[in-house]
Figure 1: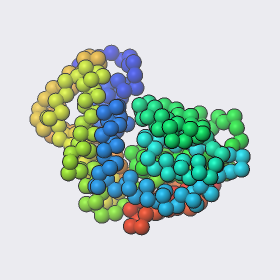
Figure 2 (figure 1 turned 90 degrees about the horizontal axis):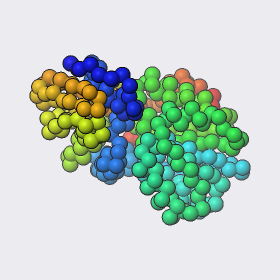
Figure 3 (figure 1 turned 180 degrees about the vertical axis):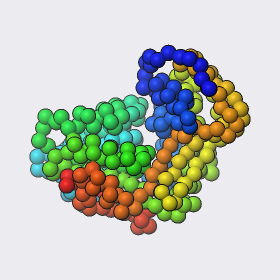
Figure 4 (figure 1 turned 120 degrees about the vertical axis):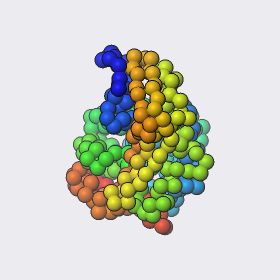
Length: 323
């Protein structure tokens, strides 16, 4: 249940929290996990032994960095646009290769977290001061609107690492890829990491680590609502609960209320009642195989140029071009 409240929202965060907590079933996007605390928690997650995704993709890029560099480079130079850049850990392998070979390019990291962009730019300026870096804060969808309006004929390479597309349902992923396709011209490339279907136990452990860091990362959503919207969530009264469906390849995360409780969100003039074991759906992490990827690409007007996998076929980076 909810109280009557204002219809005007000052931020997208306010609007999505209101709409998500007054919906049935309740849901809030995982993109709101990220603030300074959330950024640090996700960096810790990427270093966890259970979270195989980062290590697999790091090894892929490191193993194939010369071939990837040859694929990207253009005599007239190119723009490397990375959606969801984060701390750039894996991309720095390529930046090192580009800098060593004096490749002509501009790096445009995009992220929802200004904090991460600031840290990334500082790190790159210190290590490779000659790299032309132009960060931009925003969501994928905001940035994609501008990518198609280029005032240059330079080749564009769009990178989406870490299986970030996995946070979207298949229909959403098709729409996302269509928007990318609209911004691409002949000769442009899309380099995208997609986590593969595999042992369900391995997948589930990646979202339920033994140290409880993923739990803290999910619960950071409630901390953000408390701090930014003046609410009174008691995070100890919520359980982090990940599940994985091997048939659909869908991993989901929930925050589950362990008892009947009421939460007040002052800035939204909102009261939310939770019944015992009611959930908030916070995240989807989709897993893929080649057939699904081929279908997604075809629906979006793209085709696979090449692909790279780790030695255990847990993760694959695909390179797409305009069909």
